[in-house]
Image 1 (cartoon, rainbow, N blue to C red):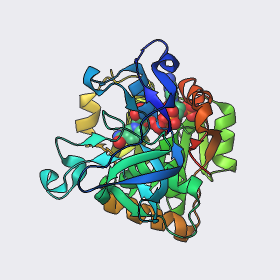
Image 2: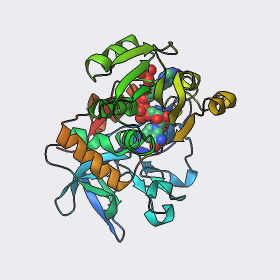
Image 3: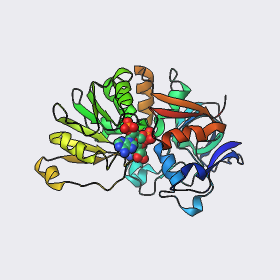
Length: 325
Ligand SMILES: NC(=O)c1ccc[n+]([C@@H]2O[C@H](COP(=O)([O-])OP(=O)(O)OC[C@H]3O[C@@H](n4cnc5c(N)ncnc54)[C@H](OP(=O)(O)O)[C@@H]3O)[C@@H](O)[C@H]2O)c1
């Protein structure tokens, strides 16, 4: 089968880390099945793997990619939950299993024609959800869902600041936040992305990086890290919540402890979500007609062109790979 395989991670030249070519078809273990993928979606996690961040030598070669949707061995249309984990080890929440692993972290991933996955990781694709939309939900959208409706605990009418409007997670937070009745403010480095966040995704207002806001917000959702952390903290009302989900620009932040304790700020980490949350997210998108913003779509054989858009930070929304017709 055709696949995009991580062979030699490189910090400086991530595109040299992968090979697009033939791989043996997967043989599912007990309790696992195969999925013939229709569409897969990129995440920044794929770029971290290509740069070698957290990658173990023993994993190589591994097929890249965590998100995707397709048809399982029994003919069911499914979405793939990208976390291999045991809910019991996480006290009922598989995202808290200390031994959890993302698909693609040493387990062959979704940038392929066929993948083997545990049966418990399959969620039925609702009718009315396109293959393109279904492929986007596994990582970025699931994390956004948990940030807003799980750990974030943000009732309708709350004002939320989303840093870095153009990214996969950020565009998901904007769309889901709007649908849930939040007031959504965004920042982006790019004027064009600020305009699109308002006109195409429905953000209520957009601000340049670091710009002073008209008033303080209930929560800041920050997947950027170092470049936006101080602005996120400064933007919060006393008692507000900083939801941290990523560190695209680096993780060396000034924690500003006195601001945190004097203003009684809650700093809340969020990492992925459960299979059950993915099921509810898919239902929400299908029933509410929410469609993820798609930046671009490429044939699996042309994956490098799509990955390049993410490496260069040019994208607005999700980059997709067409794995089969
Ligand atoms: N906790 C989790 O479970 C989880 C899940 C998914 C993703 N993540 C993490 O979240 C981050 C975003 O993931 P993604 O898939 O959404 O990535 P992505 O689609 O590549 O988006 C990258 C984002 O970073 C912003 N950005 C990059 N460099 C920046 C800088 N120097 N200053 C300001 N903004 C910058 C971009 O915003 P603009 O171009 O609009 O400024 C854009 O929003 C990654 O670090 C990823 O590892 C974590």
